[in-house]
Structures are given as structure tokens and as C-alpha cells.
Length: 419
Ligand SMILES: [Zn+2]
Ligand SMILES: [Zn+2]
Image 1: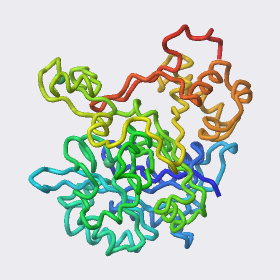
Image 2: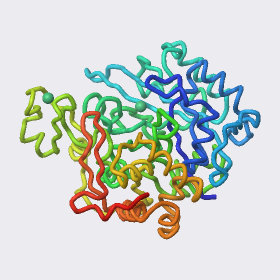
Image 3: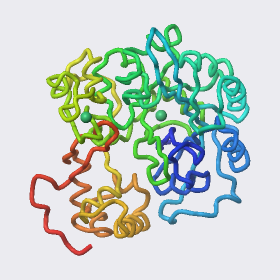
Image 4: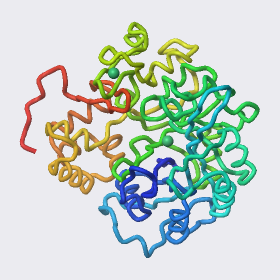
């Protein structure tokens, strides 16, 4: 079966995360978005773990469903669908290696509460798991992989958002230049990396060293509406083992749904506080210094990829699964109305489209343009046409500032109608 999986989100127990990140709402929003398998996030947090054991029912295949008595807040019938949970967590490893401070986020997927509990017991001896849904441990990422493998041999371990400057395996500020430097003889057990919002598969494929790993994409959502902003398309059985086998072997891995990487917060270089956005070339010309304040700029993902790449941009790499670059539907609607995404009008149109046409992924990728125009407007039809064709303009994000999208930029917006 072909389905969409988003395997990295956070619960309400993670810092800066919405109080709505609870199983009931995650279940509801997975359906609105069109996600079949969703990560639980944060299984290392004792209170969240307890809540998961109360609200989720094991299905015997490494996945879980929301117990029926908690299925009260339902999505529109047009989106109603089974949702399966997969136990996931993210650990922030901060440690020194080879005379440098390393800060690396890692994802762990496990098939049952017992495995999660064993990992929690082992990690609980190293640091405080209660402080944050995404705990910070003074632990070498390689050691974390070792612990994961010994406590749960069927677990999958994936370096998270592998390119972000401050907290990732290849990050410019505190990462490594290769997986081998980080994981040494355990590198063969790294079957996948998460590309993160600021990079996409073609950028990653510029490193031949990554040819053997699967490039997965997840939302890292901190609120329900952000779920699925990146995700994986799998064509396999809906079970923990089949999902992991697919990620490991790439067989049945049918691609990813991506942000346009320019939209990510760290695509370009720069200084957020100085509003300085620099391309890699400009950064080099400026000697890595901010033209406004003279301090070192934050080197973004594009620059970092450029630095580590051994292939030219646009090199054809065979056997790479397709990726679909999408823009969240609320952003598309907001653009057609010329208002912010938080506007009530955007919300109203979003809900009406979902009710009439089905899930957000269905609308963005599959629904016919005629149906979109009938349910929405001519302008929404035109916007989605352009998004599907990749015909959008984006001011790249930098130093923690999201990129800005203009679907209709560089021309007179086609005549705006009453929506
Ligand atoms: Zn992270
Ligand atoms: Zn500056």
C-alpha cells in the first residue's frame, strides 16, 4: 500500500511546542494532512510515555492506534482515515570529540513500549529525561547509537535534520564532515539521514558518500498544523518492520515531500539580527563576516553542502526516488488573498477546501485543477498549478529566518476575484 509517513514531530512536553501536541489532536491532524503513519515524538519523556501507554493501543505489528474512547475530536468526513502511530524520539547529543564541541540531534524509532522503556532506563542514567521532550544529553552520538542497538536491536537510528548549522551531523557550527567521523565503525548502521527543511534530495546527492543512505524527510512539527510539511511516501506494508526495511533497503521507498529548500530557515548564510542575507559566494567575498556588524555570519545549508560536495550541481544520480516540492496550503491561500497565514479568511477557505476535496496532500498533489477551482477560486487553481510546476519565487531563509514565498511575484497578479 502507498502511504505517507511523518516520523519526526514533538509532543507538548518539548520546548516551544504547542499545548495541542497531544495524541487526540495529532490523530485528527494526521487525517486532515493525509498522513497514515505518524511518529509519536518524545517517547523518552516520562509523562509523555505514560500518556502514550494510556491512549495508544499496540497493534502487534510495531505500530499503534489511538484507543477508540479518545477518538472524539474528529476531522471532516472527507479526510477520515486510519492513522497509525510509531514510537519515536529525538535526542540532542552535546559532547566534545577531536577537540571540538559537537551538537547533534538524532532520531530513534522503536517497535514497542518495552524497547522504549529499556532505552529510557539506559539514557535516564546519563541525563535528565524529564527536563524536555527532546532531552539534551552529554553523550557521544556514536555511543547513543550503541546504546540504541543494544537495548533495541530492531530500532532504527537516523541523524536528524542533517545539515542545520547548530544541531546536526553535518552542521557548519558543530557537526562533522562525514558520517564516518561521527559514527566510525558503526557507520554501516546509519541507513538514512533526515534532510531537514533547508535541503532537498538533489542537494544531498551532490555527496557521493551519501549514495548508500536513504534520504528521509519529516516535519519536525511543533504544532498540529505544521505536521507533514515534509514527509515520506512509502509503498509497503503498514508495519514497523516493513517501514524500517523500506528505509534501509530503499525498496518501496517512493520518495519524499519537501519544502522548497530555499524556504527553510537555514538555506542561505547571514545574520538574522542584522537582517543580512548572503549567498555562499557573498559570504566568501565578505570573508565570512557580516557586512552590518562585522561578526561571523551563520553559515547555512547550501554553503555547507557546497563545501562537502564532490559532485557538480545537477549531476544525474541514477536510482534516486522522486521528490515533490510543495508549499503548505495555508501559505498558498494566504498568498492568493494577500494576507498573513494567521488570517481568519485563510482559515475559513482552508477548512472549506478540506471539507469539499479531502486531505491537504490530496489537494496539493492529486485533485484535478478544475475541482480545485470549483471548490476554491481561479486564483487558488493558478497558485496550485504553479506550485506543482515548481514555478515559484522564494527569498531564501537564513540564520533562523524562514524564506519568503511569492507565488505571483515578478508580474502583475492575475486579476483578483472575490473569493
Ligand atoms: Zn532537532
Ligand atoms: Zn550582523
